[in-house]
Each structure stands twice: as C-alpha cells, then as structure tokens.
Image (tube, rainbow, N blue to C red; front, side, top):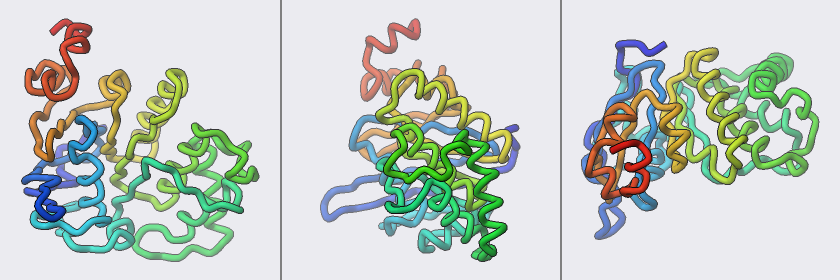
Length: 253
C-alpha cells in the first residue's frame, strides 16, 4: 500500500566526469510503498543516479534524504544499514558457494550493522529463498543455476538485509517474455509482503507499464518527465527522446 510520507528525496543531484556532466540537477521524491520506474535511453544517467543515491559514486553537488535523514556522503555499507539497498545489472555471485551461502552473507549483516548468529542468519535465508522461489535450489552451487535464478538470488541477497527501499538495476535484462512476467509478479508481490519501496531501472516497456505506480524519465542526464505510466507515454518529449512513434502508436497516442 502506498503511503503519504516521502521515504526518499533526491535534491538537485549533479555528477561531473571531467568536462562531461552525467547528471544535471536531478530531483525527485518517492513515497513509502511505491514502485517507481526509472527509464531513458542508454547513457541517460539512470545507473549513475542509482550509484549516487546508494553511495557508490561521490556527488559533485546535491543531496539525498532517506526517511528525512541526510545520507549524502555516506559510504554504501552505511546507507545499506540505514535501509536502502540495491541490486546490480551484472550479477556477481560469490563463486564457490551455494545459493543459500550467498544469501546468508546478506543475512549475517542486516540493518543497523547488527551481526546475527549463524543459526538465525540461516533461518532468515531459508525464509527469503522460499519467498523468491529458490528453496529447492538452496544447496546448488551458484555456477549451476540459470540466469533467471541468479537474478532471484541477487534479489534475495538484498532482501536478507531487511531494506525498506530497494533500487533494482535491470533485473529483467536477458530474460524471455515468460521470465519477465514472472519477475514482474515477484517484485509486486514482495513489495506487498515485505513492505518495500522500489525504484527500478528497466528498458522493457511492457514491464514498466505493468509494474509502475509512477515513472521518471531521464535524457542526457536530466529529468524530462515524471508521472503515471499513461501520463509519461503521452508526453511528446518522452516519445521523441526514448519511446519513438511506433510505441506511442501502440498506446493509441
């Protein structure tokens, strides 16, 4: 359920790489319980924004607030401990370990830096693996599971940290249409069951339209549109910069 309170606020984020401005005064708010799609052409600044918000990149200027607290400048592990976690576009599991052991790494070091004992961490792992549908593969080495299952394991590893806000970076990349549908349903179900707020980067517009409460569109490092899915796909700036007239025509625009 979407609440009225703002859980994440991004104010005027700027990131320069030498003479290149990758993001230019990007601002947005996310309400508790929302699923927000972050879309735009390749190179629009989506992953850069994710890296800035989660502390993986230092900001040139701007601020990030989580539950009203200024988290600007904190290190990624500090931000994760405050309840904001992320997945990565390219999943990098801990090789030589099982699915369960990979997820347990997240469970051992949960929110607020509290280290769990191994028994409670494994219990947490089993619960999360059941939620994402990997309970029967928990003892598989990560080298033996498919790409869709790797993506589920990555999501499980993040969930094991007990986040409140999760950034998902192209969790559907490389999946076939049936797998994309399954992934979308999983995200929506876990939003409800784990009281998550989700911001996700995605290029598969059917999934974006089906999953999102709101969509934010970036182009050349700037926010060019924000609104409901129907509002965004009706925005001529978005059609010209990203969607193209063919997709707009399919939507009856």
